[in-house]
Image (cartoon, rainbow, N blue to C red; front, side, top):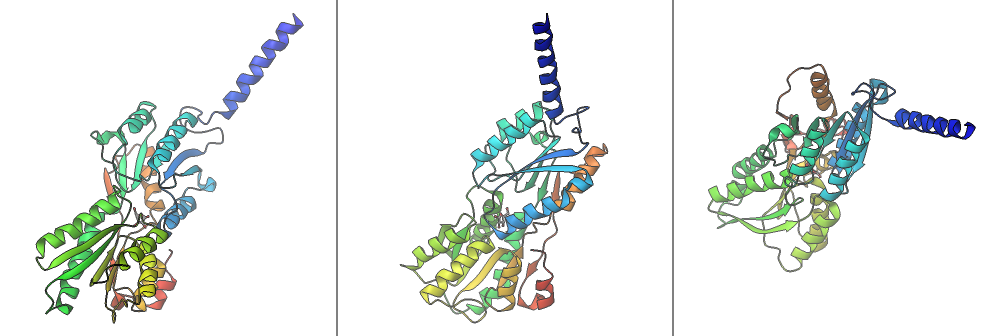
Length: 331
Ligand code: AHR
């Protein structure tokens, strides 16, 4: 009899331990009443990405009633799929996904939906048939960013290369299949379509990293150096490309052989712009944490939230900048 009692006691204690480890209590909050958010982040490939992660960490703090679990996917979608499934098993209250690429999300989003966990898509977008699989998509209007760059190129640079037959553009692309790459590329290709005297001399895959930007531009410059504009889809690739240009003895910026357009407008890029080394910085705003929090608050209060939210962004040339602005830049 004593033996049976201790077995029963063991089972009861095990059940108690399992239950106290469960995140959900009353179907919504964990044992400490924290709202648990699983955040699948692309990686840490750029200054932009690091600033975005920081913005989320600074926003979703324990003090404010959140537990933020961040998984770094190291720029691999397979890692993200596993991370999101892990969040479902943990029973988090909400999942935020910053997707590496647009496609391949249908199945996992259905699984999350079936588990009754709301999803917010952050930064980039996903291409799924059923847009009810997520609550909202908050991030940049990447096509608009690209169009702003093309518009600037049209107004400023076309004039200064008058007399030449063509404007030759070297195109450094970010991670293939990501919204940031697809839309910035689309805008440039549209611009080239509309300008018979513009030509893309080459499209290089820099995967949004400084190391890859340096590598592919160095390789390109070993056999070609005839271009007027570098259209680089993020700042870190631009910094790598600038190093490659320095080594090849090619000058750039306001008094150089090559004009540079870069995306993100991080503090370092703006400094180069003020110093006359970069011609145009197109802003991509990573400080989206507070806006995401507002959406989550509205959702939890039972209010309708918009299906698509764009963050505010601008463009900068040297004339728009002061040292004080750059010093005060949060990223
Ligand atoms: O999706 C935003 C892009 O991703 C940023 O331009 C880039 O720096 C980042 O890695």
